Amino acid sequence: MSITLETACELNPQVALRPESFGALAYHYGNRKLVFLKHPDVVAVVRDVADYATLQDALGAHDIQPSRWPSFVEAIDSLAASDIIRVR
Amino acid sequence: MSGKTLATQLKAGLDAPICLTWEITYACNLQCVHCLSSSGTRDPRELSTDQAKAVLDELRDLQVFYINIGGGEPMIRKDFFEILEHAEANDIGVKFSTNGTYITAENARRLAAMNYLDIQISLDGVDAVTNDAVRGKGSYATAIAAMNHLRDANFGQFKISVVVTRHNVDQLDEFKALADSYGAQLRITRLRPSGRGADTWDELHPTQQQQRQIYDWLMKHGENVLTGDSFFHLNAFGESLPGLNLCGAGRVVCLIDPIGDVYACPFVIHDQFKAGSLLGDGGFTKVWKESDLFLSLREPESEGACSACGSYDACQGGCMAAKFFTGIPLDGPDPECVTGHGEELVKSATVSLIPKPSMDHSRPVKINTPRLASSKEAVQRMERV
Image (cartoon, rainbow over all chains, first blue to last red; front, side, top):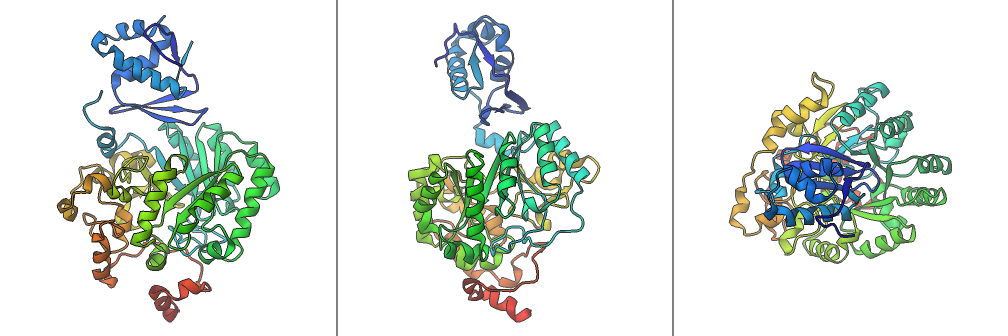
């Protein structure tokens, strides 16, 4: 699986987010993976990415500067590898 | 993306633990010579079923996603399944550690029917002689029977949990093969001089040469073997082992004991590391977030004597509990420091000043293992009896 700016994503409904000072913990009740989301901006995007047509729309809505988009694509892609994020 | 590393963030503590151990009873049918909690007999103050359920409700509210249940032998509690079911109903995952005595065919089927449950069978040797010398006569056969029952009930992947000692370190490959033959996952953890482990540390803990052996084995197999990240003191050998390289005590880890006292980690059942009781006002949450002990453990630590050595970043000075119960200052080297710095200190520690566990639930001791009887501690203990 590979996430791009054009992908329509969502937070897996089996995942719970626990806010922490550095960002959040994401816990997947299905595969029992615990993942650290190490920036509040990532948490914000992950939380409501399902409300947008594409990942890029979500990044735009959260005022993430385009220069940071590649790192977000990478982060969301690695979350998809753990099934925390999935393609709609 | 973040300015601070994850390790730095974790050292400052989380809003709630991610690795919480809850020992639900001090009662145990075995008397393992290295028992961290000196278990044996039930404590009359142990939490009631209702109190235990209230603990789970609070952990759910804190979004503690999963807990490790242990003891004593947790399955000895009559309400064991009731506690498990309450956790399951509240979406709290449970991994419990057991010696397997109560995993009958029937109980194995009951456990297999539950969701969201991990089981860890304790085994300290791949043969009865090695295992039973530490865990007691018949305990090897009991553990194997439990594993067979879990397999026959199609429980799925359970875990085999090994405390690495001087006497089983050569069996790591065989442990792995045993786990594989059951479709189980191997977990190996570090021996600590805690509880009764203090009495047997000198003759059970791996030698300096064996420390290297463990490190090399983990470098080769570490990705497929669980360790509870307990061997980070070995990182001073070179490349870091997989896992978090830090002491999580009071930061991401804690222990709730059977009477509701909260300690910094499962290896330091001692007043000095007791943060409070969850039966007090504010419950567990207040202890976790506000206790003086936990707040101090989240402060940046001093490298102390280790600052002169170039390896502190790699080994973090090792394990707090291992130092404490061998009489080494907390800012000194780990007793198993791979450079040998700790060993010298242990030799020079004044025996009478070494802290003892604050509580001991051991049953009256009948020493019958030849190895134990040869230890200095054990001989002293026998003379006192």
